[in-house]
Length: 365
Ligand SMILES: [Cu+2]
Image (cartoon, rainbow, N blue to C red; front, side, top):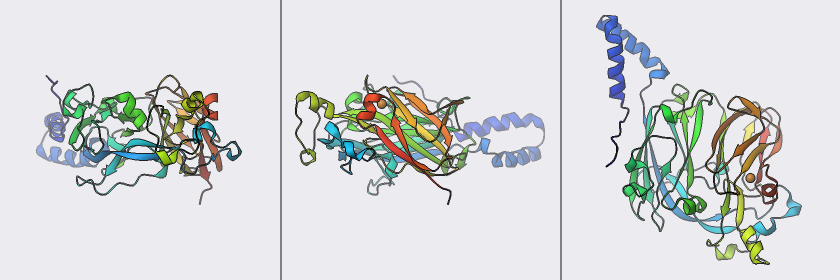
């Protein structure tokens, strides 16, 4: 039996407000105060954010340029011997026809669509499985009942069959929203959870950003209003051992079994290696928020490091943020110095294996 799920509805909120105001006096005062409250963002009506997301089988290239863009002379090493693999991705569509894809910025790489909600909002995700095996969406942080857990064999949402659609209902309540030491928005993970280990390596990973109530840009724009730009980066060593390499993507045979094993470990940021993740560009003076995600296994202890600028992490100043599998961290910076700066994992083995890219600060136009 599933637990009773209490949905915060606008009706409940309004009733509460009226009960609070009734003792104050006349209906005139009630009307006047209601008008005032309607202009106060803190009391803005909660919205339902609706998304259409499909899981699809794709070919993924870990280094589309075919080059090491950070240190060209070094090449791609053993990691460049096979670059194109069969993978799965979450793809966003504009509506329930699942025909028009929502374009993603290039810096998102392999990540699925970023879902946005404001504290108090409901989120509805219509998930269509267009792939060839049962898949799901399991969300972190938001409230859901067992039917909407997207995992653990609980109901049809736990394993959506190929060709089927399931609508997940989640609540971005106060327990999903930024806490006292958080900035005005925080990041949560979502991923497929039928066979969670395999499906994370498949590429079925995305994020949800929850903005503190009153900090949204507008009713129809739930992104936080106190920043100019935001990026999300996932640090994950994709283990492609035993997985399907797309034949024509294999550039060179491996010299040994050991070399093959290492070459199939793609030390990627958003699914791209050796600087092939592009588009992390801001203007001088921009307030930039970085949503950081770690996933994977024992090798996935990552330390995200920015050259050229420090960040504020829960009130502490640093330029390195530790990430373990399942970590979700939100940090802020103001981009001061123009430059084409390195952004990389600081773990020695991971630097060598290509877990690096650049972020660029362009002079104020
Ligand atoms: Cu690392």
